[in-house]
Length: 464
Ligand code: 4AD
Ligand code: MG
Image 1 (cartoon, helix red, strand yellow):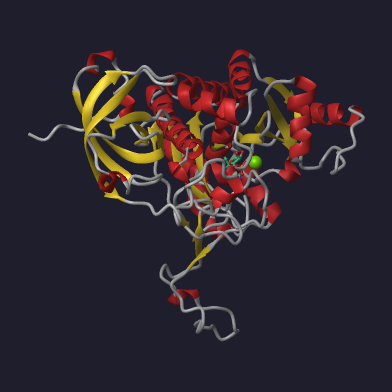
Image 2: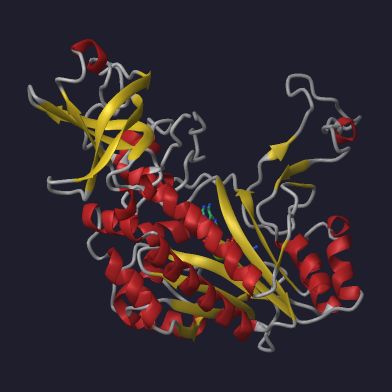
């Protein structure tokens, strides 16, 4: 009977020592001398490689020649305690089958130590490196943690549409979705495009957020969260923006802004703790390779209460800072990453939740404060990242909401279904959106958002 494969993550257990094992994976390195060769084998299940020991008396040159970096192997042999440094066990190979070779003259990952920029051009292979293996295992565990957090709290996972006919959110420019022939567009008499001939009979786009539909869910199921891709066609080439990113949006009936802040803080801390508990090897690797303050930063976020203050108080601190910002600050301006990071990294030295932003710089659906100037918004600001969460208590008053929609000139006909939540059994409610990749940036210490999603979509980049 064929021997069952053991994943490398499961092989470092003392009970297996002395057993026959079968392992499969990709060769990371091969080295050795005339008598014995050592292969570092990795199968993606862990950052750890398994050492395969090859006694050259047992294998011919012919058999060993195709075993080069990047080739894929099926190895059977005895698991033994290792004498060497850096590993506890190793496999003494008895049989080796090469599944696929990787020509050393062509394989892009033949050498170690490539830059992250180079590896971005090789996104189809970069998951085979230690760094990206670590990042994407952490990404998985964080996704799982998010579902667990909300499931344990009794939230329902809601799937909101990716194709939408409304641009109500105003969160950013949208990607249009159409089946019309762009080279031969059907026209109305006045020369505009005739969208009645389009697939949905009207113009449609990819969603920038699932929030508005999420509110429909929350005002029925009580507490929901969405977790899916969102799309923004803004031309912002920064280390923190993607054109396609994943967002988690909880929405809770009967929550006010304080409940919302409590939920956001508990949620992020849960995710960070989960990653520390389940991704220790990978986080340690990233800490040692890229950023040796990563672990300290993760632990300090867990320890500290997030500072909570109003936008107005935040502006006062920034104005009094005496710092020369690239974008000058005064009450009413939208905060830039440099301002957010000053508050978090220099002034308070811990995460900050800013609330009560000026009405004019925030979305139409946010609950209006009595001062007539501010809304019950909240942004969570993080070290190294800036804004990681944006959210608010929602305006539940039908007349106030309509007033704001009209004032902004948002086409009302697109909004009728949203407005009915306020017409029929309206309730106070609140929610927020966490940018999944920004959370991963924080947890991995990576500096560029293109390095925490397998196939980043940014302006001029959709190769893979
Ligand atoms: O602040 P935003 O635009 O809020 C919303 O979309 C609301 N509908 C959320 C809600 O209340 N339900 O986006 C939320 C978060 C930001 O704080 C940021 O972390 C992330 O999404 N984000 C991006 N991440 C990567 N690339 C982009 N282009 C992003 N834009 C926003
Ligand atoms: Mg925002």
